[in-house]
Image (cartoon, rainbow, N blue to C red; front, top):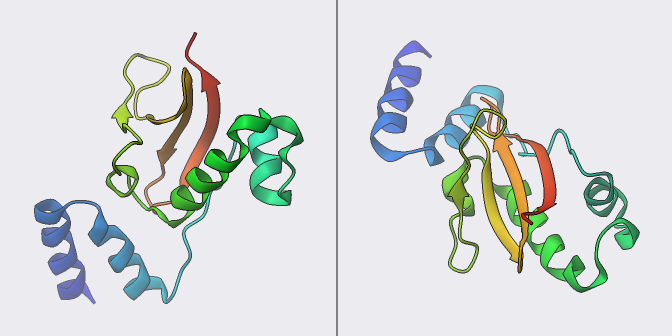
Length: 127
């Protein structure tokens, strides 16, 4: 197992975060990535209960698609798709967070923990 870990660590350094998912799959058996924590109550309700009442009606379809993609992702690079405009955030309060475009000034913010789960998922208006 130690040799396998060394190989995956080397691949992670060389090839990016997609190897994290494979390492944890081998180490822990099959595992599903998930979103562990939310900062926005309406977004949490949309994800857990498919209840769109806490978000803007014109953004429900886009948020559902983004949440589905985020659930399948284990690193920021997995969210770097055309049109999403993935970008890292800076500053003391937002260091380590990433954002993707939802609509206009609205962004979906998130970060990943060491096991590849999305945490602190938030939906904010930049202005």
